[in-house]
Image: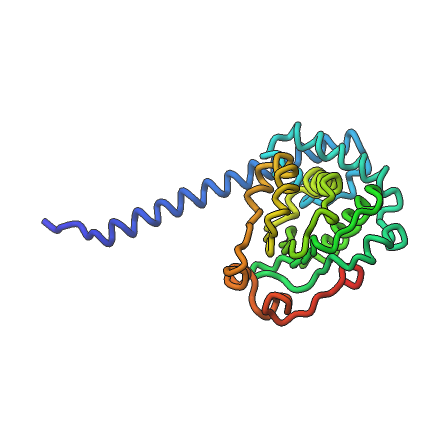
Length: 258
């Protein structure tokens, strides 16, 4: 009587597991596609202008609400209403945000190892202007990032450098407004956020903002120790794509020049 081959059995189990996993993924994708179709029909019935929206946007809102069609539909309709009132011309012009752009605090260049664009923000350069101008700056920035998104990509990676941040830079009202716009109007766009050179004093503002960050976004935030800065960034970003200021090869490019 032949003894069973342990390796063969193990291989068979592995193949069976992979088949089951592949089938489950297919079923999951099928469920998501079906829900996208239902959601599109609902939003188009309520707002015919949504016919111009692609399936990727529908999917992002659906995923942001864990595939709950009702919640995602309500979220999306609120977004459409907000966009019409806040950006009636379809875009924010640089002439609307001169003081924000003059602070020279936001840059975009390179991609991470998965092809997601990299955005660098300097928190220590932020100064309060009017809340309205800052909100317009946030929308201008997000629209610019999305318009420069490589084919097949939907998310971006951000390095928020908080070096030099003090109470004169503190703008909790502005931070909360930016967070609301990101989470409610541009869901599933942030892939990862590295917080670097974080001074202890910044944590007073962070503690006020943190409760308003949704659970999905919280999982994308990484506080980086100064001594591990280079090694942490290089895990996700190749040296050829990393900004020069962090030991890479690329110069910083102001967002308005992208």
